[in-house]
Length: 418
Ligand code: GLU
Image (cartoon, rainbow, N blue to C red; front, side):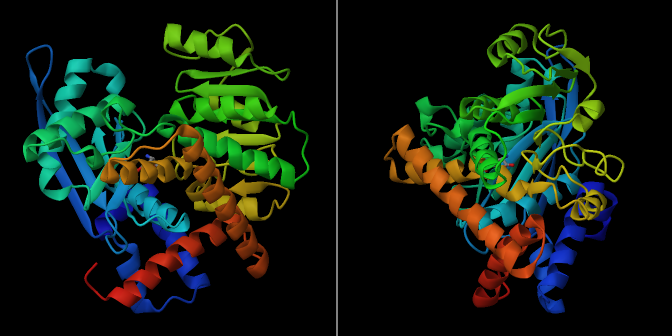
């Protein structure tokens, strides 16, 4: 699987793993077994476009390990999707699920397509054909998909429908993050963002920062917007926000309701009158208390890691900080990092709740869901901080080593099959 290493995200995930394996003194014969993905599936997705022409899209699904239960992870629609990137994201899902004690291995899927350039009909045909091609490899006890970048509740509904049609009855547990009306869970849509807000708020308390801390959010999609709204509710001031089109900055604080209304009406942040226009790169460098990358991977690099100006770096995106940037951040102990596999784990935790509810056909109240979510997040944060203090290591190494160790333990006790 060395060919995957040409992808920078996969190389980054492997480098992170190797460093943690060294820290854990992991025996050589356990390393590859734990690191390499169990199964990679690439499919061609021929789809008739609205124009009448046929276009073939490329789709992937990577299942990292099946040691502790089915694999779990999102499906991403983005023009830059590559097999190596999907494999990296699957690996991160493994450590994320293990860290939160969920009975899952990691997975990720992706289709190389720009969903903003597709009609709703084209998106439906891509999703259904992708699902058909994946049917031999997925199932409620094998691999369960969820939304990720560029996909949403509707995408999950199409996957569920295609799968259910194939097996002959409704199978809600085949996906999570689907609409509540067909077996989705209350709170799943907001879960990742609200989880980020909860953890940041805990970190604000720990560092004794003011309640009206200044927050910058890169990415105003499902995760970034709910994180911003959640933090505003805790009393924080959102001073900068961006999306792919660029950003808006106002040190006095942005009116989030007006911003949301603008985004819903125009489709992007561009032109929002409540602040100054700013580029994505510049926004990351503005002084703030909390910086939340909530979009693409590898945005905090060796070029800007020495210049970011925050006390808390809350990684709502998957893999936003490169290994080189991490080395710089380790020299900046004033920055408290909430690593991605902890910071954004609220999404997959509530996905787990959704799967459990579907399997039992017994649904929970929203208060119950958030109560359980915050208990798991709070406990996991405490465990990570304790591990970091005990070994005098950074929060990311602590989080990764806890997650990786749990997978190793499962593999050691089961044997070579999973
Ligand atoms: N796509 C989300 C993630 O990266 C959620 C995955 C899930 O809920 O399975 O964590």
